[in-house]
Image (cartoon, rainbow, N blue to C red):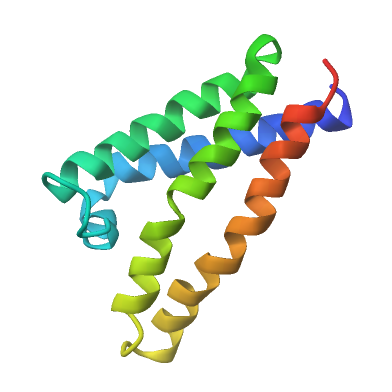
Length: 123
């Protein structure tokens, strides 16, 4: 496996773990769903988990990796409002919890970069 192939597999793994977590612990994700979205938060929790799993599969397969990488970048941009919601809602929590909430915000940039790097890699 090439170095870039390894990066793609690692990104697919991160996305798959996150996707599964949405189904195993939806109660963690429901409160950070932006309240401006229509319908119940649980719908959006499950929808984002399913999207992460689908994108993970696309990134993992060499034939769909380019599209999957682009989709992963778009997904990381799309979930940024949830991370902002979490940071706002957790601003008065204990320092450790605030650090988790605030730490998710700058993490999006390297995730987007990583996804785009995987999308640009040659087969």
